[in-house]
Image 1 (tube, rainbow, N blue to C red):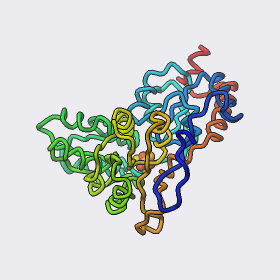
Image 2 (cartoon, helix red, strand yellow):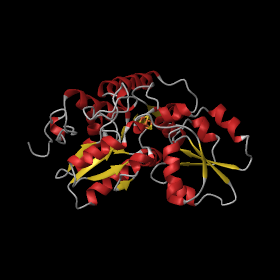
Image 3 (tube, rainbow, N blue to C red):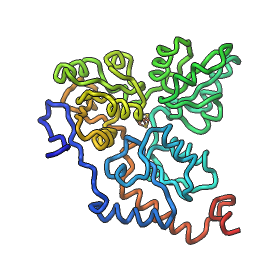
Image 4 (cartoon, rainbow, N blue to C red):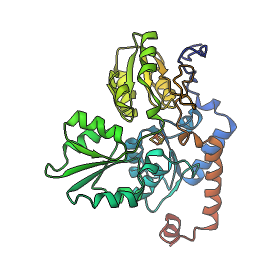
Length: 333
Ligand code: SF4
């Protein structure tokens, strides 16, 4: 079975993971996407939480910070952004002249939804000394109201560098904000938003899993609840989770974040074992038999939608785009 973890009985918390696919073995749909990509001069960026088949066709797979950096420096004309709405929006802000494709326009985010810009503007008026730090998981309107944007990978550094004479307001994730406060000792006012997927992890279930796998190191995303973070050997962004697991001499890891990341972890560390932490089930009852920690928004993107949207982009390309200032109009000038 090589580096593929076998499907386990329901009471064991493991996921099956595909072996990385050699290029020659890509299915016809993936090969069609490679052809479209060439035609469009496109780059495919995929978040760590995307389904394996999207990660396998992407030019770059990473976290919000890495994806933004790729979007900022790409020479491609078209960015196919396989992630959620605020990520594609950020890529568009960084590349106003390029076409940015989000495979499913309804791929939102509970954190983004929790912080409407008008509510934030109203709250900011209650303290003129507020200095607003926005976690990147928010709308462009909220970013525009903020003094600085951070990701989970650099939030601690950003807060440490914030002006000392200001009252810090951290939006929209109260759990990430609380973790940053613990790290920096800097008090902040926290917006009451959360990631619906990460707050589903529970301490008791994780303790039971640690009992089953006593040698496993526990890596936790800071969007998780404090009761879960307290059990972690490492708390980090998805990108740092991967480097932590790669450089660690340990062979077994309990992963407390969205399960899509396991695919990349297994590709990069084929000799190691990754175990998904269990989440509550839809009835909100504690359970160890449901281990599918999936973000419903991230999973809206499919390979079929990547192909479909890329095709539509080509036909728009051929007709010419009416929007002034777009890269095609400028090229035609
Ligand atoms: S995992 Fe959470 S923070 Fe990430 S896109 Fe889904 S809802 Fe938003």
